[in-house]
Length: 434
Image (cartoon, rainbow, N blue to C red; front, side, top):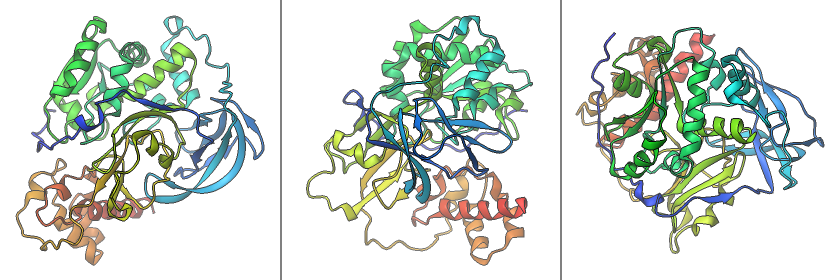
């Protein structure tokens, strides 16, 4: 099946803002916080007061796809606390007090990936709780244990969203590890064709030139146009493979993994370090010196801000729009102490320049429909949501929404269409589950 032509829009990236300096490190937080807000629930493997090692399972996610959640530090489980999640929800989390010894489990030490079978590599993914670090956090082992034929693995290095440069920075300083991890992702997929997808953008040239001499003979770099939503999984698969699919990329014979996921897998195989840290972008026009940091998963964002000079002098904190994730798909946050998760890519601090401005209601221009990559009509969906017409919302195909944020971005009236469509989608999905 050939893909349809998807709507595209060039958006100013503001990425140069955060790549003028090398990455900082913040690997010794006093405590880390692990969310319990897992849809299918968790089973605890440890109790309050227990000592845990870095990489030791503290709980296991229940449901169809089980996987362990590991401690990112060695220390003591202090108990359950309420903390802000990047979804802008106050949720229960487990606090682990860091003992700063970095004592890790020996389960993954001295692995020999060259001698490992496909099944053994996939088992490492499962045992380490490796999840996608650039999207919804889907367990990696589920993707790679497919029985379908895989003829292409794509490493997504597009960094679709404006402002975010954490994957760029991760690869810039760990190019050899990326290729090392990619080699074994291909082996885990039973595949012999790997593609690194990256945007055709000037700032990416240095990364491209670093990667080229490191590529194995079965790997290549393919360029995506510098448009939005290039980097969205469907867009990437369709552009690179020339094939489309209904539900999952495997239907097109493709597996997609984020660059940070690939790097994390390499760290486990090469150094015996299970997923415990992540590159993050701390940026925006309210930050003194934006940049990137490699931080422990579970670190609070307000502990990272001083590394970048803090908030600029003279800016009222109440006049800052703080976004967890990208400006297109992220969440506006109330507080700065939300917690770093496996999937969080950035904390963006923007001066609110539209405060107090009044925008007109819908102009009927149709831009939201013209630019929707899922070919929906966001304003019609918003209208039916207001009256609670669930049957009409289903007919309008609301569950196809990928919440990319384009409809709100292109709307001249600045109507929060993405939020409305997201609520409508949730309503229809909940009805379907019932």
